[in-house]
Image 1 (tube, rainbow, N blue to C red):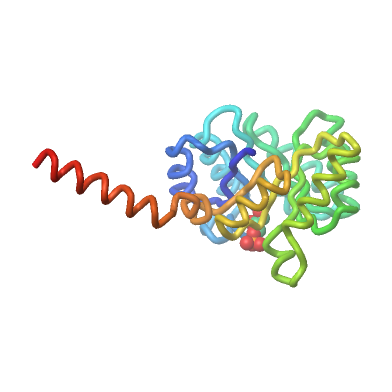
Image 2: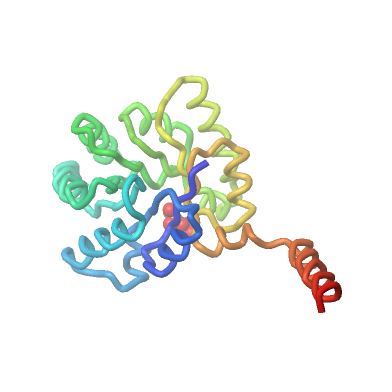
Length: 220
Ligand code: G3P
């Protein structure tokens, strides 16, 4: 399973990249706004800065703001020209599916976002989406089963042979990451806190303290 970081915060992206485990980045308009990035040129420059940090061959999802097909195509084409790493992120709407089909024909990678059902996952895969982003946390938020959705889509893609990668999004915790991996997600995009949370185990801390204490006793 690939690890993406779900943020527009450059320090968080750098920290994850330095761990050597980072395969890509996802952003969305809310995450860009959270970092105070606004205005077309600033937004484009920020995507370029992200691509520079992660280096070659690591996909960076940049989301279109347009909701109409023509606008999505225009905006996505501009984003895709920024850097080879850019994946055009498109919402799961009728125009979005049409745009994903268009980008697929043009050889431009896409990430279909705001996915909440298996039916939507089938449509996006038919349109040739490179990535599909089911929102695990937001499904859990309404007392449905976010990880169950990943399992269902993974089964459908396996059965049908669809090549779209399942990118588990709206991940909120280390447990979500483990569950998404078990459920068959090809990629998990997570905030830095969830990635770092994977490190934690009290027995690791206790064990390390004991090793160091014993070494000190033996070596003075
Ligand atoms: O990748 C989508 C993600 O950013 C949404 O996460 O926590 O706002 O549901 P959240």
